[in-house]
Image (tube, rainbow, N blue to C red; front, top):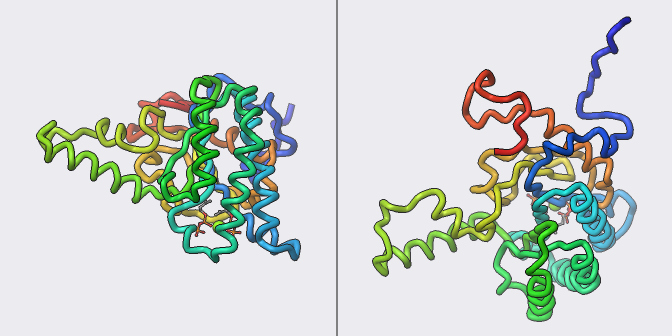
Length: 266
Ligand code: IPE
Ligand code: IPE
Ligand code: MG
């Protein structure tokens, strides 16, 4: 019997499906930088807003897929602290889409036992968005099937500054000495407090950068970049990212010999 020819492009496979995934070795926490809405629209001669509308549908499908797979936490980077600098009309459209998404998703989130959390400075969001966001967060607070973190007006540096300010206030109040601050104490001050660090960060749209996303939490995340623009991100591309993750050897600073071949999570 001849062995099959080695694949030239190991990241590309035909028709990946859930059966090709190792369900016992899934990432506990997946974070996605949902990029490429504008380019997707431009490629079709459409205004950028149409890309964002199409992207909102992809959010719904991706949440459902993650829940079906049994992923513990899914974080979606939806709006960065830097995105406030975009043209006011685009910001307004994005905020409107966010509100519509939250209003239409509440029932589905409850049905799927998904808890919604927000990373970022909610106080910077328009009042009406803040209200509906607060309502969905409250109503889904008891759900245990999956945590869905929406990163909104989120910047990792802003998150770290806020964490440092709180720790500094506690020091000044005499709660503890600065030399007693540990990594765990810093983690507990972040918007992701109590959640595991992301095991896998997926970025759509082909850029190899983090764009101020989870800089602390991403210390040992595996990163997967796909050229697929966010509105085209499908179940197949999602599975492919996870499959690729499952082929990585996560060494966490140790040698390969010290590490089990496929250690998906810590
Ligand atoms: C991601 O798509 C959505 C947000 C950042 C809000 P973009 O709007 O950044 O799309 P591109 O990168 O311009 O194609
Ligand atoms: C990152 O995308 C932020 C979100 C996906 C919300 P950007 O389009 O803002 O990132 P840059 O500007 O290309 O780094
Ligand atoms: Mg972009």
